[in-house]
Length: 291
Image 1 (cartoon, helix red, strand yellow):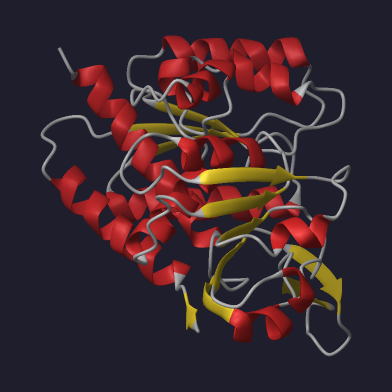
Image 2: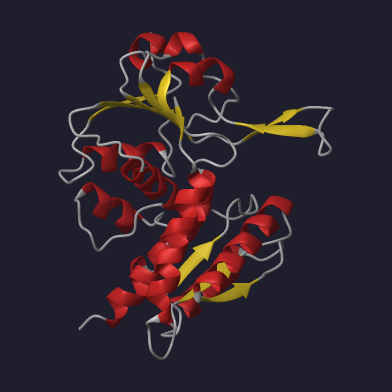
């Protein structure tokens, strides 16, 4: 059993991007990070993205509207960023306050600056296998993890647990694509799937993105499977200083001994998300500069 080290792979990608950006003369790629309110997790995530951008040499512009901002006012901020020629990528940190329509906000970001990959056009380009589009960062990170770990999906049965727009649907589309590293047969399971374990036991590669702590157990996988655990769940644990422990959607202690390869939580898929955001930002810069 091999544990796939997401920290190490993400560090390699960041080093590659740093070398690429260092060769750019003049203005460097720029990402605008929009964080509404002071949600502690969002503050932490945006700080991490800002720090990684700085490490690579990407300029970050932080916009911090108050939690009371109206949707129309947020749209005005996004419209200004869309028009700004010095901004290459825009990320709106989720979750947003309940009075703001998150999907409408994602659609408001110009497709050519949608480095988060949540715009309708971005998802459509993934479906059409148009390489000019931006892939959502977590699914893109999963594909990189697999490729750099020597997992070729060609002819494999990939089972995806979860159908979200952020992970489930795009990773299914990516695994299906007619390109190197993909060409898989894909099954997507969700809360209405019957005989779930019978399907997951068929998986050569299982992607768990269902948002339920330690949901996948030993009886749900076959020996030799590759497991990608996308979940990040906080489970109460009085023995921990924070009062909780982080766990994925997979019961690691049960499932890992059966796997050929598995991603841990933390330290698996998570670090890849920020690395792929920066990769998308450099890509947006390159595409804008292209004749």
